[in-house]
Image 1 (cartoon, rainbow, N blue to C red):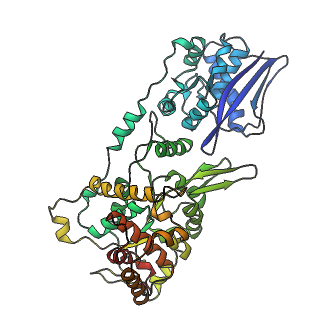
Image 2 (cartoon, rainbow, N blue to C red; image 1 turned 60 degrees about the horizontal axis):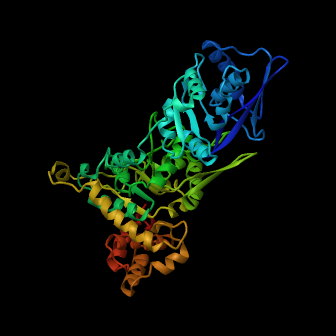
Length: 513
């Protein structure tokens, strides 16, 4: 008997519906065709054990299992469930064969019939709705994630017997209900960190506020123990809250990568990824024989924090140059090319020299001559070109540490950031793909970042006296425009340019000795 069930395969952050055709006929042995990998081929042993453990029988005739379309590679163990159900239907152990056309089934089977969680439940559910399936049957651990998709019935199951009951009596099965919007809005109000916990460092808080308001990339330069990492962790708390569309896109990426906790729904907070400096270039940008998203994609709509930036391998840093510009990463293989989103803010931190005390207000630097410049040269010029703010961090003074003065909280800073972002949203409404000042290209820069005569003279004087490099010019204009937006000023005033000039430390000739 020939029977067809439906599953789904994830490629990039999209899912493709797979038809599992099962034919039980005369002969012997079992064959799996349609470009299956080893995990799919091994499913026959898991399926046979699960079927026998629950009082059913495995046919001893020829069983042909075809995964169509046959030119797409199938991988992973999530096809266990549709194959098992297809075999039961083809051997007439499952009576309601017509119900198979209404559902997509996905899940890994244990030898006793228990159903284990899978990756990519959210894109699979989106694909099911697009293909107009009635419902999706998958492991209970992934049910809340998939149930975020409306106009689709999602059934979470724990055991093979539950799947059979669901198919035999589909009218009696209860779909998983998730109040996505309410849970999403409630979770957005919760935060693990807050700027009110940071003593002093008002200059750095201001720099991070500008960074958040304009979507800029930034680097913090300071000695060990000055609070660089602590401040960086609090940057997401002042970014605008995720919209539902952004949250959905971010959740899809984490779902494909298997990074979502069990029984979770939408990601409600902007991602903050902080990979170790020993990371490989593939782990950063993504890859593998079946490409998976890397750290830059997991930081999509959030922050990628690179602590001890000069300690990262040169090749790792250089692969970020293209994603920083295009806000996506394309991973090409012999038979496929996949795009992963990578619209993130880069926040880096570094010591000013190997010993860490160059330009320290109290301690002396013990590095020999030329070592500071050599240390800085580990970061290439093209990468520094893409970093708008260079912020020097100094140690917190004792009076600030012991003071009882109330510090400004993240919620208050976020209000100013959101107001500035709304100004930029209106400004760039007619420009596709641009939504903040950091994304302006040269032509827009000339139209939008116009200076007053006094502001232009101030910038010219600063360029000459501080020996600022040419690459600093555009960055100062962009940051100046953001500072003006924070002040609700239509024009970029001299004081805005003066503040922006402070954030170009590494471009000053002679800064590194």
